[in-house]
Image 1: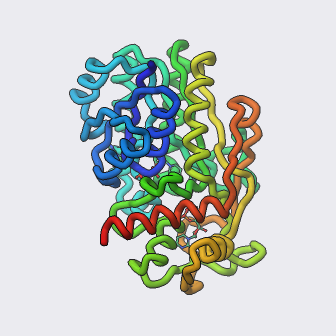
Image 2: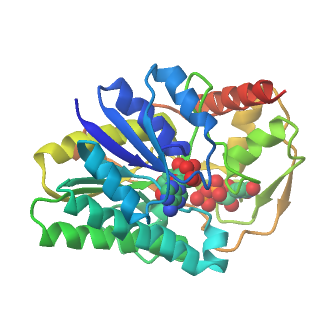
Length: 337
Ligand code: NAD
Ligand code: UDP
């Protein structure tokens, strides 16, 4: 049985990937400082998979803790989700982001290499592209991120690619996610950030529960069919499967792989609201407001490479994304009341 260290494994995408790993015969060790997640997720992971992941509460910049983990467990590979991801905060507190995301990744990578572990899967993001001059992003396009968060992701990608060039035994995959949404079919795990959500779907979910009053739709004058921003929303379950396939791919392919994970089909903010209203039966009130600084009108993935090299394709559509999100929020509500 292979053992995978999952940093940030209590978080949104990490927890779904932990379940997918356990369901596919991997043993999981999680390292997470819980700065944007809640410990209850660990017991919910166990309820789903009937297996308790080994959990270390700590920081990826904590070298002694990393050394303990690599010493105490026969780690075969690392999936690195731990990171800060709020674009606005990254602009106002850039050093916090460079320290957590870049210094943290370097520390983890150094300790991993010292422990003679050679496989590393990294959570990158479509934000690394910035404005490459087209709306459908392909891996070979120029990368000019327009915010600090995106720059931290691109820096770590480059560190990994350089590392793989210098250490021929290293195997790294940089997975560029588009917009992850949805939740586990059980309704037990989903996106439940600390504080007011920044992202569209958790915000809509909290409105449906009556926690938040109204959505602000950022921008209605974009050059898109209904004037609101278009994004490539991808079900978190499909994303988790992409990590499993990347791990398997790296077994036979040393070096560095950089690949998009998206559906290739964009939806507007108004389409997402309407799809959510349809499956939940709840009305989502909204105001059309100014554009949010740093937002682009439209982007979506070309995922041909993921299909060719990983055999990966997104399976779940917008209806299932909304159904699963709504189930998760309903269960969260009943658990809290
Ligand atoms: P999340 O905040 O739910 O999960 C990240 C987890 O990492 C949290 O549990 C947090 O407590 C932990 N963490 C953060 N810094 C840490 C540190 N220094 N040491 C230990 N633990 C730490 O976020 P998510 O949506 O699951 O995203 C996971 C990864 O995917 C992130 O790196 C993010 O940048 C990337 N990503 C996310 C999206 C998205 O829209 N959700 C899109 C593209 C890429
Ligand atoms: N959005 C919105 N209101 C919100 C949050 C997001 O209108 O409260 C829009 C945002 O402008 C973008 C889309 O929803 O067009 C997705 O935004 P999100 O923050 O979820 O992800 P991003 O694409 O910024 O990574």
